[in-house]
Length: 123
Image (tube, rainbow, N blue to C red; front, top):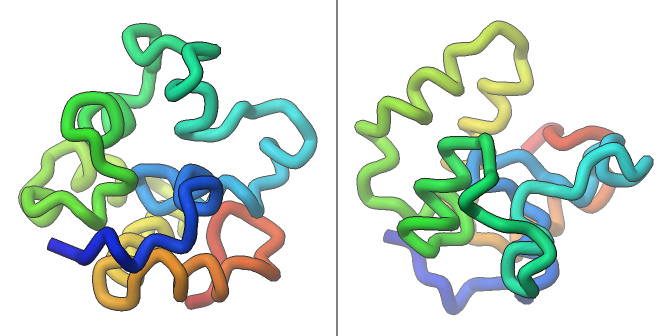
């Protein structure tokens, strides 16, 4: 399991989705059509019981992890396997993001993602 002491700050890690999406760079969040993957659950503005994303419910809600990169079961997770095999290149990039975080930590991920124009980018 990765070392949480590598955290780049609660605000920054809260902008990384459980699945590896980088919400801070996501157009939908920037334009206000999305509230982000994890924002609002700590202060009660959002209710985890109403969350539709099963990955978020498991990772953030049940296991109290920042991302699936911290989960020792992520390699065998049926939720992640289904998610990462969806059509569209972004899902493979989200998978690579989790692998990158696991290997390099949140701080390095945030550094790499600062110039992205989408919720995924080149690592």
